[in-house]
Length: 480
Image (cartoon, rainbow, N blue to C red; front, side, top):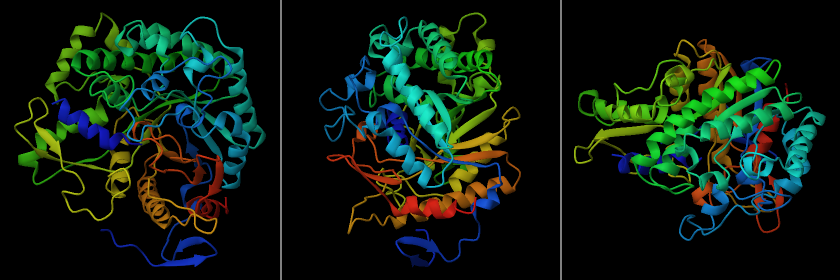
């Protein structure tokens, strides 16, 4: 969610729209010229929300859970802008039934969530924690009881600290650690869960955590980053193979943070930098999975990955995913910048481009970007189906007279959904759309200030208030 902002730091270090008139019915803004409905996406189209364990669960040290890298990192001085941590977060651990009731009330049908590895295997490998196992059984059962499909993400950035102490993803042993974890999770929940995602945004957690140190575990430099990239790519495919083996009729995917890349002035001047940017943001992890290898021709520094590639590895990078999850929030605009070695390019921020619509994360509101990136990923011959597994926005929210009238968020969703439908109508096999996110939550290194939720959370009292954007989705999906 804060990935666009921090990926700018990654790349530097590694190297007004017209709003339509509104009518208001009750507290729900409705656009007079909204010329599509949820029915236009098709009867089988999935609608839901995406969440992440560390961002919502809390209960950071309860019932046998050990520390994750985010438990450790968020308690280090200066790592979180607001000085906060995810110890309590949204207290989903104790409030999940209430929260799933809220989700159901919005007419959504999918709940995407992640497993906290250290809640299940406190030592990273070895003996499981029964209380952690039981918790996710309760969450999954609560979904099924409400007619919600559980979509499970195996890894959403919270590696057990005990494994990080042994090198984390830099260590080749991470392939066996992850394989053992996936074996256990898929066998434990595979009779109830049929929709699986291996990783959430590998380009983000590898670069931010192991190259620039902005995210957990806070490491910097290519000596940390390059082995991490290769081992994560190996795990991405191996995780898929393990699920395929253990879960009957599994629908298996993995998700990528991605943004369309535009040149600032001209293709001739800025094109090479834009291509390198595209490699790091969009191509680095999907192309190995598709059997295309690493995109070294477009970004030669990646040839240094050869140091970590063992015989047989390139074949092991491949897995035939049933779907690819694309996660888009904005676009990137890149110019040539010769003083920066390696990258020789620099993202031009929305403010410097005099963009009028910018979210609380500093990201440009650019609806066409989601259309462009869907088309880019769907163009790969071996991509069978695309899901939008995250899309959303953070704006300043406040409760006034018991309501949150977040008109900018409603506008954002309507315009982005229009572009998703555009791609679908042009023949892209798009299976669903998951909003980021259900609840305002702990937004990684940004703390609790950015609010992405359809539901407002008072973090002092844990009181939930559905925002007007949530009510808008309820209305939008009503006919289904």
